[in-house]
Length: 157
Image (cartoon, rainbow, N blue to C red; front, top):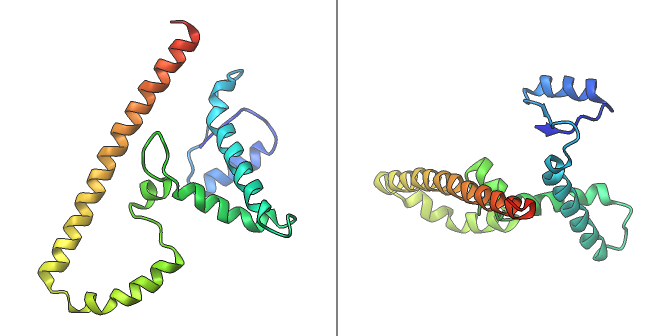
């Protein structure tokens, strides 16, 4: 986890990171560009909560609705990787409540599947995971190159 060098709650935060096995790094002092990604995420979350409140009668329950906003963010396709954070971390698409209904409808077909079909489905999943991983690496590399070009253009290099 990458955070700034602020001192508020530093000891408590470091203790929590140690307890959960989280590698914590701090940004370089006096380098606000490093905070850009975190600031962009906060802006995105604020926008999502604002849009959600426009459809709710009670805007006092933002903490109860935050999970919906975060689920939407985590399932959204990111421009740099061209995959959702959910897909990258779990190697599967998110399951919605409607998926449970569809799963019940197809349960009978799953029971009838033979061993060869099951093995082929498993291998398809393995190939999908490998393909996603390769694509993520390529997409991140392309996004980094694009960001470097944009930075060089801004700095006149």
